Each structure stands twice: as C-alpha cells, then as structure tokens.
Length: 617
Ligand code: GCU
Image (cartoon, rainbow, N blue to C red; front, side, top):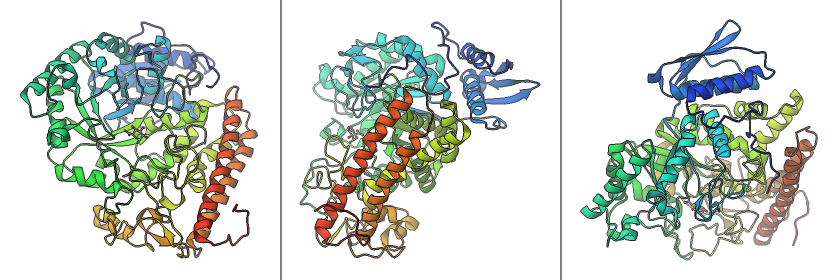
C-alpha cells in the first residue's frame, strides 16, 4: 500500500483545486480548469470558449493576443483546455486545426470485483466497490473523471469481465447506484459500460440462456429497457463468453455471432455498443497434445464469422494471440476481420510486465503493434485498468504514464513514444531539464530491459504460475493452459510454421513469409515461431544460447543502471521513496530472472557462457 497523496491528481499537479461538487457542465469545468491553471502562477492568461455542440469531442485552439480561444463541442472544449495545459507543461507547440479523436471509443476496462478486490490489480483495492456494493469517495471519483478527461478517455467499464456474484445486480437492484456513479463521471465526458454474464437469464427464472430462444431475447430486451431508462447514456455491455469457464453461446451449439448479435439487438434501440471479447481458447489442454496450439484459437474461431456480426457489435481482440505477454506477434485476427468492427485490447495492469513494481512503459510496445497491424484495422481501443485505491492511484507513481499514454494514443495512434513519455514526465514533475531527460530515457528503455531479463526471444510464459511475477521457466510447462516452451537438451521453442502447427499461416502473405523463416523472422519473435537448437546462429553471428545468456546479463545490468539513475533525481516525496523502494525490488527480481533462466538453459544445453560470467549450477 503506497502512502497517501490525499486526493491529488496523478499528473498536472498544478490543477490543485478539486472540481467542486455540483459542477456538472463540461464548459463550466473547462473554465474552472483554465482559471486554476492560469491564475495560479501561470501569468494570468485568459481563455475564451466558443461552444459548437455539433463538434462533440472535437475542438480547436487558437492564440488570441495574450490568451487563447478554444472552440469545440461540449466535451471538446474540456478536452481542448486539457490539451492546452498539457502542451504548455510539456513545452510543445499548440496543435493546429481541428482536433478529433482517431478512435471514437477509448475504453478502460476495470477488472474490479464487488468484494473490493481487483483481478490483476496492483494498486490496491477497488476505488468504488467494497463488501458487495458501491463504496466510494465522490471527490475521488471526480478526480478520476478529471484524469480520464485530461487524456481524452471516454468509456469506463466498471466491473470485471469475469462477472462474479453479486455483480449481476448492477443490472437490476443496483441500477440506481450505477446511475449515481455515472452522473459523477458524465460531466467529464466519461460514459459507463457494464460487463455482463451471458447466463444471466438462467439466474432469473429462465430455463435457458440460448440466444435463439425468444424468451431469452425478450428477457434481455426488457433488461436493456430498464437499464437505459436509468442510465440513458450507458455506452454498452462488455462480454467475456465461452472463455476460461465463463458461460456463452457454445453451450447451446450457437456461434459467437449468434450470442453477440442477440445482446446487440437488445441494446441497439438505446444506442448501446456490444463489446464481445475474442480472448477464447481451450484452457483445458493436455500438454501431451502437440497439435492444439493456443495462439491459433481466436483466428480459427472468429475468422469464419467475419461479416456475421451486427453493426453495433465490436469484437475486442488482445494485441497478441496469447495473453498480454512482454512480446508477442500481433494477433493475426486483426488482419482477418475486414467486415467486423474491431477494438484493440491492451493491458495497463502490469500482469505479465512487472506488477507495477518493475518499470514497464508501454508506448514502445503499442507503437510496434500499431505499426505492424495498421491503425485503421480497428475502430476502438480498450485497456485493462491499472488504477486502484492506493494513494497514488497506480501503486508505482510512474505507472501513471501508461494510462496517460493510452489516452493520447486513442487520439493519435501515430504518436511517438519518446514524445509521449517526455510529455508525461513534464506534466507530472517539475525537475531540472537534465533530470527530466534522465527519467524519460529510463522509462523509454524500460520495456526492452524487462524483456531482456525475463522472457527470451518471444518464448513467453516463463513466469510463476498464478501470480505471474518472477521466473518459473517450467511453471506452465505441464499445465492445461496451452502455454509451453518445450525446452529440452536439443533445443527450445515450438515450430509454428506450415511444417509445425501452421499458426504462421494465419497471417497475410507478407508477414507469413517473414515469420516462416528463422533467418527473416525478427530476433525478438524467433522462438515464438521456431523450434531451434541452442547452436543456431542469430543474425549477428551469436549462437542462440549465447544470446539468451547475454540478454539476461545485460537486462539485469540495465536494471541496476536504472536504479543508479533514479537515485540522482530530485523527485518529490513520497514519489521518490516509493520509486526507489520499488526499484530495489525490481533489481532483486531482475537478478532472480537472470540466474534462474540462465541456469535453466545451461542445464539443458550443457553449453557454457562464452564470457565466463557466473551461471549457477
Ligand atoms: C488473463 C488473466 C485473467 C483474465 C484474463 C482475461 O488470462 O490472467 O485474470 O481474466 O486474462 O483477459 O479475461
């Protein structure tokens, strides 16, 4: 549990007056923010607003004498003010012309359970649920709305995709409370979404949840009517079905299109969007079975359904075919559904990426994903939340960067990671320029460093089972989750080319060819696509085993260097203490990874490190 910051925002500390309760109009809030920022020591510049409701989320900023004019829609002017302030803090030039978001839906998925726990949450308990009900400080929710608006995020799904009791009551008895919660966030342009359980009709007196059953269809329509009457701007439903033991249409021999469309039709009259997750695979696999290959699953299931989904269905696809690993190839499904609206799913919660203890700035990863797939393949972005009840919202004060950056990528998927990271640093801390650069460069390199000391060359899943923090190279090897590396004394990895599981053939030709050849395949993904001997020669002439050793030694050394760099920064307290304390843990973690993985591979390969560094027996 981190120390309290009171109710401080995670960035833009100069917005140091809370938005007053009852200030429910975005325009009024925009004026309040401008006044707070410009009157408190920022030269008293004036900001004028021109409201054009039809512009909705869009805005334009122009200089006017000594001040600024922001024209835009209701939410647009608010976004405009935040962009102006962020830009000044970051020392950027004003954006020219009308600004509008590239993706209309920019969603945060909270995996908050109603008992107050957060699935894969690393920043404390839920901010709004406790003991099976809503329990929150409205002032804190307003602060959260402000943070989301300040980076242009417009949808918040408030409950876990794994809908546990009593979250189903969010759709009935708890609706008035959902409405109260929605009302706090509405002025910030944030609409709520709810995760729903596909089997709900069964819990409500029906004998089936079959999507083709008229009674089931009518039941959902009646629910939708009640729900949208209470929360007229609810964004929609999010559904995890037939995945990791969640109920779904398969139980009735119905397709995912039939399941999704049934729900989509129920909520369509109210403008609701049905977000259906594509994270579906066989989680009861036998490790002896080398034919079933988990990364193939989503494509095999959904690609034949392209064109079968209603227009208010959005299929939400994780960026990689596995599950938010440090490095995965882009999911082939993202290329294969041209007739289906898609959302790209990221995970801000650092489940496999360091638990918000180790530093892992995500913009470089997103840049690669968006570049490889093409930003136009999806119409929406979603990210699993990294927020929690901890004083600083994120557990690690620097983990705030990932939420901040996610918002910016929703507006501009072409954003340069370096600039986004620098903007977050400057929006968060007042430090001498050289220190800002130091922090930004530590963050920029953090993903690469984490990758080096953890999972080699795209292997994935060498984490400790369940917790997913720390090394356990064989932890997932004989389990049912389809997560194998098949390391032995001859080599490591899985052949996913045509000669193997055929996964690589799911890609468009140009990528399929690249991945099919160990010589052409990017090093980072080599062992994702190929099974290779330890003596395999990499592009730079090193052997595979030497590269594994080198990466682990280097990654660990880099973590130690990061620690030294952070010590030189005059960060404010309690951030400094928290960041340094977590950095100590990170260095311990990096050493453990280095030693465990290197020992694991040396035992199998019997090959010594060329450089004679310490590898344990
Ligand atoms: C991961 C994670 C689960 C989560 C799942 C999902 O597998 O470990 O906790 O439920 O992703 O995305 O639904």
